[in-house]
Image (cartoon, rainbow, N blue to C red; front, side):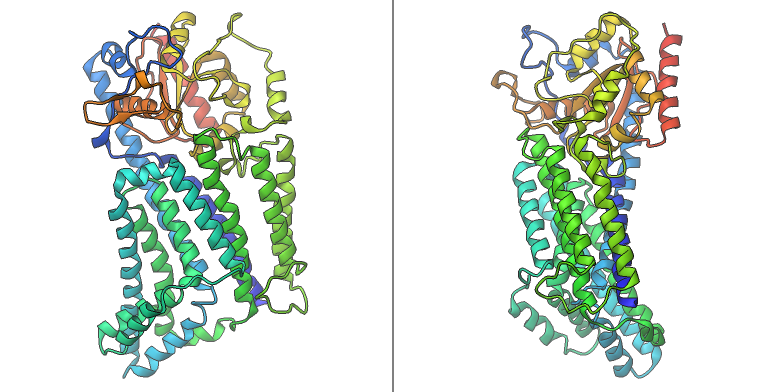
Length: 565
């Protein structure tokens, strides 16, 4: 009973880890503003090559200098808030990953052995506690150094670019699939034995140096279990773009590993309540293998969307997830066994409950094949418009009976690349959308978004569909969606070197530069309400999953526009 309860706890930890990723992703695009690039916004379909760039238009039309300063301050405040929340989410994800690693077969059996060594080798209980604390601190130092090394190697700008870089995302995908295969029992990931032997030899030294190398030995010999978890955490932290993300993630991971050693050294009697090692430890690895395989698909989806490859549409992604989680449910029921599994004489109640949860989740995803929004996981799925057979969006279009203008908008630029969610009509070029707003005298809703932005998808699937929000966006605003991570190359005559020596080459570059130069922010989603004269109606905001709050924000912007007429 106890051993399968541990598997249940692990599953809920991984769900929480999944959620922590969602909370961090609204700031995944935050960058170092020292490399802000100014780009020409003239689209490749424009006939007038003399049109102003978005940056130049901002300089002409932003109005009073005090208004511009206010916009910069607003964007900076939002960016700082998002970065702080991102680091907390990375820490929580790392901590939960450390707890998952703790109950892996490479570490869990070492816990009572190591604590017993400290208690027997020390002259007193306080001495054992001191040694265990030094051991725990050594674990923290080792893994934090690993996180810092990742930061030093890549740097802040490179970490941000990883989130949509095609080569890196494909490498991450392959790496995570390999990690999943390792957990499923295909092979063992091990570091060179010479590393382990050298660390183990130095662990015989007396004093704190010997304890440090004991911790280093644990980190090396447990790599076959911790490597896939560490790899995923470092990839996640790196692609979130925060400079200290990898170090903070490794701090959370190592802290979760270190606490039990010190805790059990202080209270050795607690070890009697630990479950015995056994086949359940391998079951933990297998469950993690299925989850890691599912998570790997998100990285392939990111690059698929950014480069418009159209390999992994929504229904294909969902089909793969349905199969993966269905197999996990069968595994938990004992209907599927792998090479390293121990014989299961009976099905325990906790494991049965786990199987029910997993299979219920699998069934929950099935209606998504026909377009059901699946709001609880929509942040991880490809956008709704990538689905070929979508009854949900068709129903929203059928229900659109109101329109504030007999002549609807007719966007032309970039419509071959992008499609607005929920049957909305959106412009994907700033100047084109602004020109239409002036024509119909409506306020503008700028949605700075991204293909890899999970909170953008969550806003579009859980907040925007509400009638109070959808009707306002559809009837009262001119929607302009600007993708800051799109990798479509600009025509050669629109590519140039900025004043800071940076090449502007893609559609995503120019919208990212527009956001940073105008609002001093580059986090997504980022919503800006403008008048047709380009004055900011309200302070820009990021993701807001409270429907009432977001609807009130849109209404307040509309009221500000009417008051300023």
